[in-house]
Length: 249
Length: 249
DNA sequence: CCACAACGCGAGCAATTACTCAGAATAGCT
DNA sequence: AGCTATTCTGAGTAATTGCTCGCGTTGTGG
Image 1 (cartoon, helix red, strand yellow):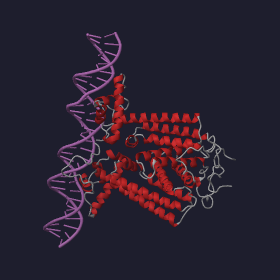
Image 2 (cartoon, rainbow over the protein chains, first blue to last red; image 1 turned 45 degrees about the vertical axis):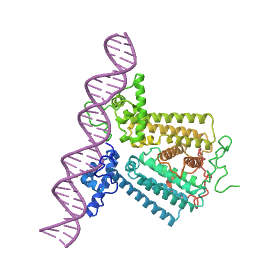
Image 3 (cartoon, each protein chain N blue to C red; image 1 turned 120 degrees about the vertical axis):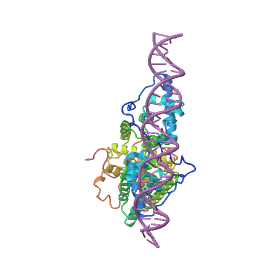
Image 4 (cartoon, chains in turn orange, green, blue, cyan; image 1 turned 90 degrees about the vertical axis):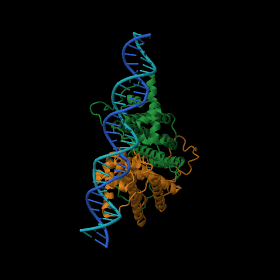
């Protein structure tokens, strides 16, 4: 079949994309929790398309009817899972930013911590991650939530970076956004398909180095206009280039 | 329904994952081409799960029967599309590496070209890309092909980098792999979901700067054992570090 | 022009799935 | 216990889809 979501029954009912019903008794709250955990496992195992609602219900030890009492449709289950994940990530981000603000550490350590946290966050249940983020068609609301999260994270990271004198990038906001996207993108990619040639430790080390170099380098604000021959035959220049932290002469 | 691929009919036929039949007349070769192009469009529009074989056939102006004469199942269509794409990418990579070897350019320009090519490659039909790479369960054969392509690309890039004296990373092979993965990951990410805050031009510029800094910085081969205070307050060191391509002592 | 092979057709089968509904079971209260 | 709202049940329904098969059409070699 295939995700026939807002189709089929125009007059009767099923168009309500909202939550349908909220569990009020303890029993039902437990049911919802079991359903969500079962859904996570089933999606992990079968993917979104083949992760059928019947399978989810069975795995949770309840009947399909119960599932549809709390979720208007299959997509809503995935969305709930996604929201739960986003909330968790946001909580973690806040926590470690608070830590770093409370007791500052050298830039290198901060970045390394950041990279490792991001990698760890994605290394946990990578298949589920993939199913939820890539296979599921997320509704606009979720898109917005994700965007908001990312913006907030970039701003917080920028704020953190501004505290370091070594960070010389001309536009900290942009630099933070790039750094965040880079880490996210690579974490995503390596969680889904680990590369034997680049084990997690090496990845973390290299990525940290790359970010540190990027943030502390004063490069790239010319760009745009390109041109300008940057050294005769593509050589010589190494550290000789004008920008350094402390101009030698 | 849902990708019921190697199921259902054990004795009769349909288990052959190979190509089934090859078109020999001109007419049939045209049919196959039309089918592939139609499949690309249909997958783009509906995703893999809802991109039904009937729809593909209809879009191609032929009947389903004809589709199944050349493809053993739906998945095979996606795989064919994917193989076509990989071949194309490999061809482009070879072409521009040849160009760069023929007439060398400064590192910055080379990197910028590399970044822009990668971004452009993914910016073309991003939705189709996503469907094929993320929504489709690719068979081991394809996985291997992709891995091979990536390895080859990394090696070629490393070879190219070795020609630049400014490239100071202690392990060019690793550096090239990281650079490649980074560009691929970001290209992928931004093709799928462009960020208004980071338009393509800015992304290309920043990414180029980041890579250049990374490749020309001698940082990162200590790491691993961590600890060791990296200079009083995380600064100074830049190109000053001792390691270069050739181990000093 | 003829016979044979390659190719194309498309109704329809069998499987699979999202989702419903009428009633049974349970919890919470007096 | 008795009563009501909440929760759970699961067989059933309509839709949808991958894929087949028997037959018609077109190309090719002689």
